[in-house]
Length: 392
Image (cartoon, rainbow, N blue to C red; front, side, top):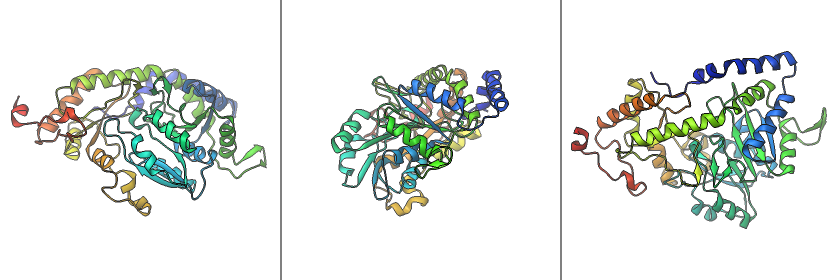
């Protein structure tokens, strides 16, 4: 069995440090918004190359507070994408605003900047690109559009810890950047956690107030706020893991290169990060038709593959009242139908990656045409997987 993710393997490698950090917090008797949180905030801000970081209790809370801090209010519109986890949309709705979806680029799978300007209305307040799978969206044109129209940009970097775009870190380009520390993330807590990073002190101050009941001092509530505080144990654990994130990121990138090489003779559409980007591979997804059948066959072979995300947000039953229908976002919908996520985590061994690809070859070969993706979107996928090729 090759699991999709192995958090036990990660813990076993740093167990003494994690255990010591947890014991230190418990012995201190200080469990919420204390010195461990402050220390982690300083270190993570430095890692992201931003002036400020405010730790919160989840990535969803980070998005919610970033929107509120940026002044998003009921009746506003926020331009975003549907090819993401539902938290992106939920946070916009929490703020009282309306999500307006644009389609994604067929090569990078992130927000298509060429579609953003046409989606702007007098009610538009912010643009919220998602750095999907660990690859940053094309931020320069997004920022140029935002500045021209006086809009705020909030980066959903929940999957992109340490990713870079033209030498700049995820979270540092927009007005605010939002991260999740859910256990399976590239930098994951042993529970829930999130953070907002920014270079703007007024945004940092507002997030600080909003996450702690709007308190400027104890029992001095200056604005209406929330209980979105990060606890000390998670901060202590994240501080330990922050020492390893670069090593783990390079391991992920090495595994992605391994997958690229092993899949190079097959007509699977694979991640295509631009040269100016540093992809951190929270997810390594390929595109293939008959994806669901291949997933079943992989799991039967003991390969823990998965899907991110099988139904885009605009087609989820929970959000039908937003008014979108099948066909509104054609690239997003094709990608959601084709994506298959392969196991990728720092502890995965190269020989295990080879096993994954061997099983994938077998699964696809059992279904004619399974590996053929849209040739207009992916020129490298125009080869038909003929009976002759399968026989060879």
